[in-house]
Length: 198
Image 1 (cartoon, rainbow, N blue to C red):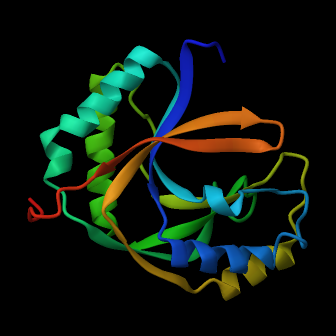
Image 2 (cartoon, one colour):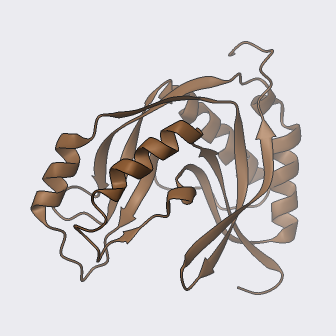
Image 3 (cartoon, rainbow, N blue to C red):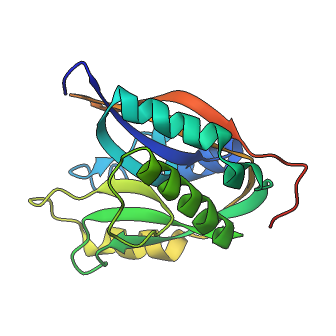
């Protein structure tokens, strides 16, 4: 990455009690599958738009579009639930393990659509894959063997980690370091809670 590029994404952060319950649950499985690249407890989030490495001019345009765009200001706070586990592309040959999203998940879809439009207006390439809200728990390296028993136990023991109220989104910087990515908020964009959902 050069000095004039920034790696970033837009996300929904988890409520602290939900994050803590998820962290305690995941801690049971880390020793069972140490070859997986487990996400750090403080890095759990729902990615709305991964921007990649973009020029600062694009970043400023994106931030401005999100800050002043009417669509985002028409969204009120809404509840989400973190519940269940899944895998991309599937449990037979998983590459990513994730926790699922419930509650008013259609609102997340709506927010993601607003963010995508703002990103495209800022000169960032449109996402080609359909949006699937989730929280990444671990990545499975190509050479790793993930024990079937671990997957079964994760699936059987994954209830709900609770609900939280989503009242903002975060524009996050991502720095790739040897010990794993480091995330730093660039800006937190609050919803306008005094407006009804349109």
